[in-house]
Length: 118
Image (cartoon, rainbow, N blue to C red):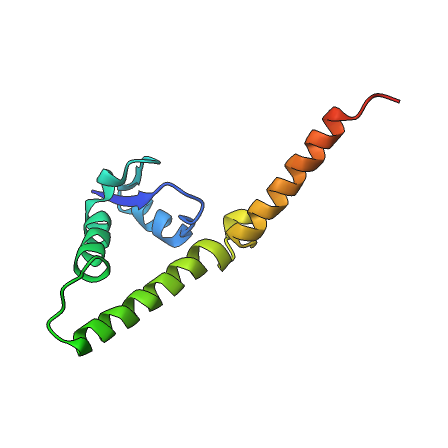
């Protein structure tokens, strides 16, 4: 028996790992950059996109309003998740703050490399 999981720092559920080991099983990690290895999740995202986000024809104004509100909420959640949510793998910084810190460190390093020796 195997259990599929993303191969990332968020897979730290020690109790699940212990249970898998005790049961004689092991996790099967999904290779980075290979979304086809997680077809169920990718299928769900595709259906949300096709059936909710990409629709242009609606039966009524009320349906259009409900779907527009859902789009706005999904976009707000996506923005929060990808820009503002603290990630443990980034030392609990948001992706945006982590990127800003990284860019500043790169600028500092570049300036140090350009400085002429004393």
